[in-house]
Length: 248
Image (cartoon, rainbow, N blue to C red; front, side):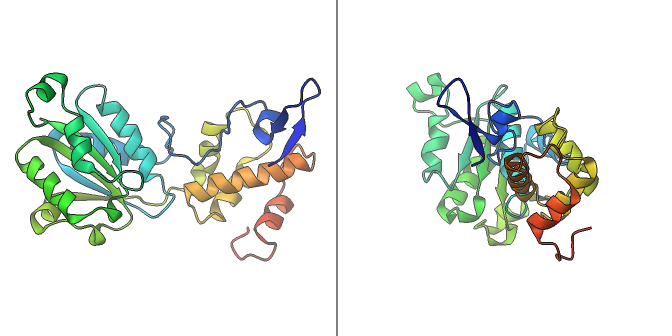
């Protein structure tokens, strides 16, 4: 971790504190902020499908922003209706989670949930029993809509009817021209990385948003440690390997 001691205390400043930020602005943790640059259309399409009561599967490789999209949409719906966000990588009892989300009155009378919108993350590691339970509640109209996120629709344990009822949305690669916009949404006042350098870093991050943020952070750390005010082409080439073909 790049750091330096604050003259007035024993606190060791992180690279982002040196730049004036209280928290890491390039954190790769799924966030709830409305800054998912390049995915505005797919977000609106999924919101529409949720409102009319459909099942959606959001498919994309690791690091493309599926969890961030899922959490953003979930936070919009939970203000208006009964909703559940469930991550299979962190939880194991989906049925318990759904039943817990019932209203107070429905809990008192042991009634099943009604018109719930459910968001399932890491769907590729789910089990078939859970999906059969979900589909039963969906066709009974206990659950209004379901949004799954995973890496491969073909490997998810849907039954035949469930699979045919599911609409697939794929996470396409975002344009490299948005690289600077993504950086500016996180660090609006930064002057260390130019649009040209942001684009180079993005291209050499396989156009993957998660890798891009990780590489941006590492490059900035190194530049700050070296006392630089700007990230130049040589810094980027050195970081990725001077002879890497994609450097341009």
